[in-house]
Image (tube, rainbow, N blue to C red; front, top):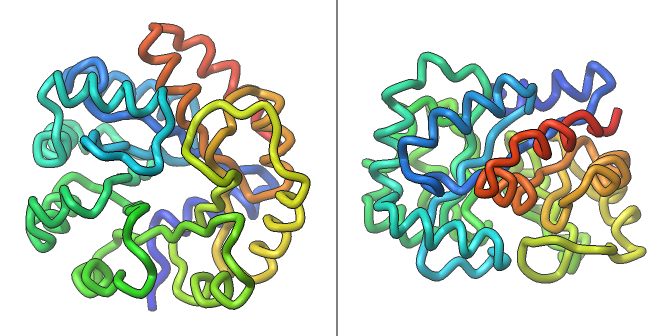
Length: 258
């Protein structure tokens, strides 16, 4: 099976002795017109990939900052269909992999085949679907065959070793290692078991392991990133864009672990 672009980009970063940095944004927060500006700003800032959150009315994995951003995006008229359509209008300017993070319901409402087709037309490199268990994932992976779109798997802190190995066997792109038991958002501290958990994942996985959920400041980016192949930062970036504080995002990126 051919290695997909998202995985190649992550592996190249690791091979250079650096850590990957995935920046999450809530697509449509600030209006669809802000999408191009945010994506290109992050691209110019040197992020490894950009995770595009799709606003949803019942976001079970999202903390307060991202929930509020999702509500603002919905009020601005953003949805899965017009977000992908908007991205397609400037995809030639995008050289950084885009990963769509959406729940399953919007995909089913869109129509799975139509959704995958729109992702291809918009140059999407990966999908994250938090409420899609591995056992049911063939409804998506069957449609991804022959495409360059990777389905990124999530692994929780409570996943038993047997399940970790099962997920790792099918993983592509990267593994999203969830660092907390709970929703996204700012955390002051992480469990003592996190370092061992990430070490186990790296042993089991043939793809890079990135840590996400709760990583919200430069110190956490440095410390958690050192345990994994990279980090995913969401709430801090979403809040910074909402506040018009792009400098804060630049500061986070400057503190990337190496």
